[in-house]
Image (cartoon, rainbow, N blue to C red; front, side, top):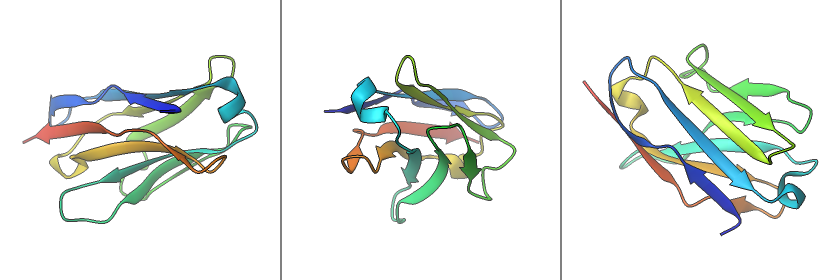
Length: 112
């Protein structure tokens, strides 16, 4: 596994979680990194993305609540998720188009 996602868990609505995606420095170098999620019975959707230089973009449903960031020295990309809602419940995956690599997924469950 070349991308390692971690940080999922169970949280009450309104709470926070921080996901982390780690890889080798070679994998992340000069590459965009994206977080996706897939809820049961739904298609996988793009949640947030960050370029090598730190430009970010978010799905409308998470804008203002989620923050994506990266540490190029550590080759990690984090997703800070605040004000979580039950509809945020899904398996979250990190992805980089460099090598078309997916992380193994981490479960986020938000209870109402």
